[in-house]
Length: 262
Image 1 (cartoon, helix red, strand yellow):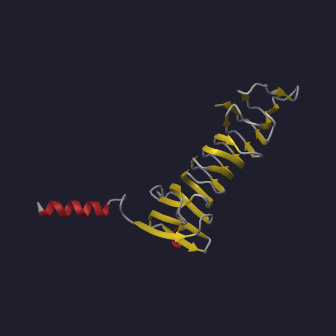
Image 2 (tube, rainbow, N blue to C red; image 1 turned 180 degrees about the vertical axis):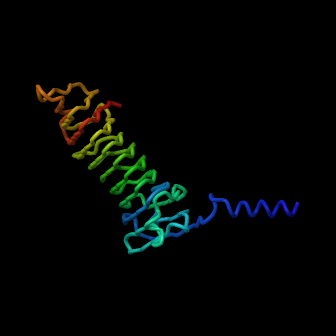
Image 3 (tube, helix red, strand yellow; image 1 turned 30 degrees about the horizontal axis):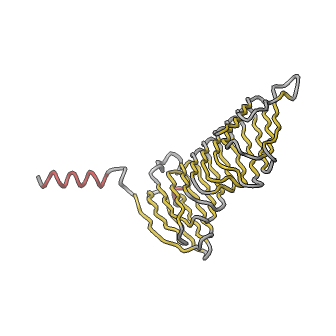
């Protein structure tokens, strides 16, 4: 029995899922509206807003290939998860999906996130959010949205309480945004082949300017898109809801644009 126990322990130690995994647990005070910068290659990022003034940092990563640098600056904190110097030329092909970053941040904090392939979830944050992703997906729920999102092939899903100023750029990923429009909000969408879907309440007040080269435009609010050329498939839709307080523009190459009334 004792021999079997030691064999089992040795197997666990040698398991690829456990080997090299390290933990970082740290608390940093940045104030209620400080800045949190995060750079990550791959894995999972979970960010939750709260009413405190500290950032609670919990990271699990493989320290055979990666290192974690955390720099405090009084009014902010920078977190960088990058390859070890002797792994920079060999990082491709490494399984880095086991990296997990969990952050609890002040609700009004400014977030600046850059990732290659990390799936990111952000909840209950009302500060400015700027996200750049390549192939990871982004889900943002709750809070007030303002900021920018740039994605290559990752999908973006946003369900905010209030939509302020926002710029969304996508190559092939889909962008779905839902929420109330803040007074004088400015929303801009640009996509190549990804679809853009904007959900708004029937009481929305905004001016719309939608253009697509070969994609379709659907509008639950009434007016239909018109062709802009006798020789090209390009379409355009311009109309106003209510008093036109907000400004919404969308431009795609082959992606579809959908305006949905919730």
